[in-house]
Length: 312
Ligand code: SF4
Image (cartoon, rainbow, N blue to C red; front, side, top):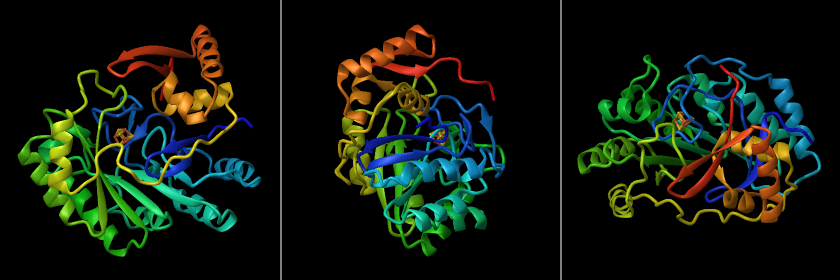
């Protein structure tokens, strides 16, 4: 099946086996985080609209889910900020009604939750994982480089109000960028902000693959551990739902769609698809020869990312 808006399914530490749904074109977001694994934001926007056609997304979901594939979650994530799509709630409710065997997760930067329509849409998800990387306006600007009409207080208040009415599982992800938000003072500021948000579990994260800016480095293990203790959070790799091998059929399209969302090593793809290394290597080689993907060296090895993404 050719997939346009769905990608994976891939195993995720916290969500188990997760099918991604991408509701915005690459790379449409209200933030331009220095660490973004999807690359720099080319369309910095806070406009809610039908960025990709809702009927086409729903039809692709129905085709994929009707045979009842083994999955733990259907997850809104991908090449930008999913809450920018005006029909996020409609699509989430469709999954819950038509495919009740599957849980729905939303990976969001949380910047638009102050809007009642966005909060109402997010309520439809069983799990919401929102970002909170900064506790001061300065760090918000430095790490997240937001749309000019956003400010940190607006974002934290949106999360705070949302958390009061939300009955699902709420996670806050704090992404540490050395030199920008990992000082003791910055972490205490994040703790103050996170303390306003009810019933949220905190997870600490740091760079695992090339980010939007080449100078961003992973935080040292000691700093991550310090943040974890200070914020009461879980470190990357902390146990959550166990990721299960999907045994999904792997083909060129599926591989390309996964790489488009985030750069991957050969080993990442072997694990994600539970596929033979030889099979993955051959597809990567042919995609590279055709100029559709390119290599990038990083501290974790050779990553593949898509070449020549379409201009916004
Ligand atoms: S990390 Fe998330 S919120 Fe930040 S720029 Fe990338 S897609 Fe947007």
